[in-house]
Amino acid sequence: MYTLYWSHNSASIVSHYCLEEAGAPYDLILVDMAQEAHKKPDFLKVNPAGKLPALKLPDGSIISECAAITLLIADRFPQSGLAPAADDPKRGAFLMWLFHLNNTLQPAMLRYYYPDRITTEAAGTGAVQEKAKEEIAMLWSRIDDHLAKSGPYLLGNTFSAADPLLYMLSTWQECCPDLYKRFLSVRRHAEKVRARPAIARVAELNEVGPVAA
Image (spheres, rainbow, N blue to C red):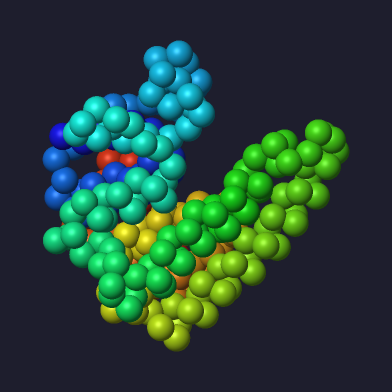
């Protein structure tokens, strides 16, 4: 049995999507970030970094980091098709997109949402957010171009564990207003991912609504 430590509309939703898609046996422990439960001693024993997601494995060990959890689930449940096999020609592209989203796009978005982490100057947070918005729009534009040419999923016609991560990030739209209107291939991707039964079940639990116009 796997145990996912999660909170509504946090990055834990990607791990939740993948567990559901994989058909893995799992249960959930809510760590309510709105109540700062992720900063309390009980959870810090689980993940000293105080961040979600965290996943307890059947052997009792715990791992964190969204991309690591995503990749582990995909590899432990190969029948799910969440990741190309190690010798599949698409494996490199899968890893590239998974880590690009986790290490490039998501950090840019976090700079917008948490500008105070970037500067000690209170008057400088607005400038941090504006620069982040520029970078975020550029990154979405590149992703949109890729999907337009090679979609509808990141690996063409093949759904992978990178797609739920992309979908989740596309729902965080305050940092890129009208994202689905500006980037139509991203919207098409979001609609296809959201329509998958496993994704829909988890999205509803996490209070993520249908794709907005």
